[in-house]
Image 1: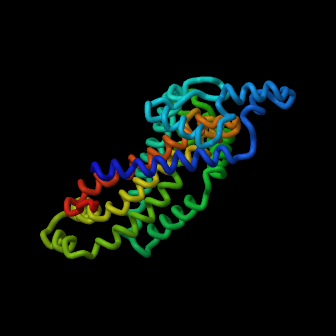
Image 2: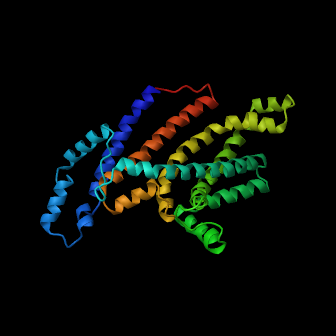
Length: 303
């Protein structure tokens, strides 16, 4: 575990370096965004010096790393707000959205995958396959507006966008959850089909165990390892995929904050948002390894 935690450091450094270079190479000047085209050259130079943007990129990156090592994310170039405070305000909304989307995906994907595997090459399997292929073919930027039209504008059951009311989270969570449910359905079906004919499953049936116990207690547990892999990777992608979904539904999370900071050329906020998303990937993968050991004690982590 210590080696894995130390292995996170090069990944984080690489993310910081690439993000820093990319946001500074993107066309546009935050000073011009803040002051407008009518500002004088002296005003632009003064603001650029006050923000430290007149220094060479290596110097700016070194200052950024130094402050970050002290737990200081810096301040927004555009608003002057403390970035740590911005992240603390937006992160809970993104986590709620991602966890609800994950719950929706599991509640839909696992039963459909099990049903398809138990009725392989019959009509339940065919329906589950068609449903999963259809959902996986729908990108978030298309599925989100479609759900808006259906449930908000035509039926009037749910809010169109925003965060007001307890039901406002449903449409963005469905947008994120349906795509993951399609992946889980196919993965659960394929993994369960591989273990249904193993010797230990036949032995469990020969002992007279109920079929439900054979499937859920023996076959499904062994089939969950690749499913857990997909869940671990997709949970991180839910946070990244929330960038589009949060923008569509005006959900004030990390994803929307990232889009706003890119539009304003707010370098420190953009770097902080990307860092949070990257760390979420790393931490979720680490948690996935721990779940592996819980599901299969034979697994030992290689150095």
